[in-house]
Image (tube, rainbow over the protein chains, first blue to last red):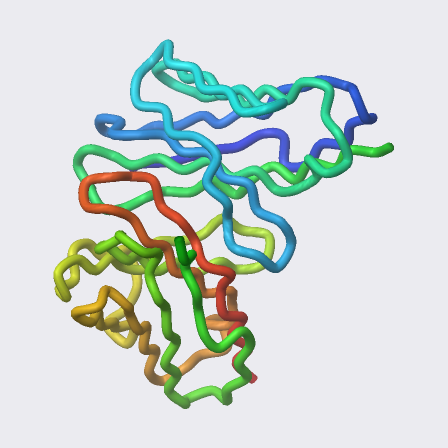
Length: 111
Length: 112
């Protein structure tokens, strides 16, 4: 069964304290892995798409990486405005139009 | 470029009633997906529409149904509402063949 697991569930960081969020997945043929940011009461905001192991994408203080079993979202020198829930989703080859989301990591950055 | 919009923002319904939620796609996008997000959970895929036809469905009963119109806007209909249907309903649009989905702000449905 296709599955996505994110860890930790919640993370509190001091401003400037770098860390990583994990997304592990088991799917029958990965078509794509997606990272989103979601603020309370709002829809998810698209961040990155990764397609193959070894691929990396960067945007400001965020960097996403992908292996055959997991993806990491690295946050470098975070700021309070980076506080949000970060969601990971996968699209599997055998269920082409269906996306499986993890439950997210709630990040709080303390000034 | 206009983003994804959804209406209404909030809705309160009684168990057993029916509800219709609406979504307008981002400009240039022809595929629409609907998701249900319970509190503290990730979005759960309901179904996807492309060229006005259902193009994939998650594990939701038939009382969840949808429509897509020629202008790519979409509706989600839920019949015989249950208490567990209370959630944030999200619409996402994308271009054909692209996995990059852009979400609307959602409709918060409360069933009492």
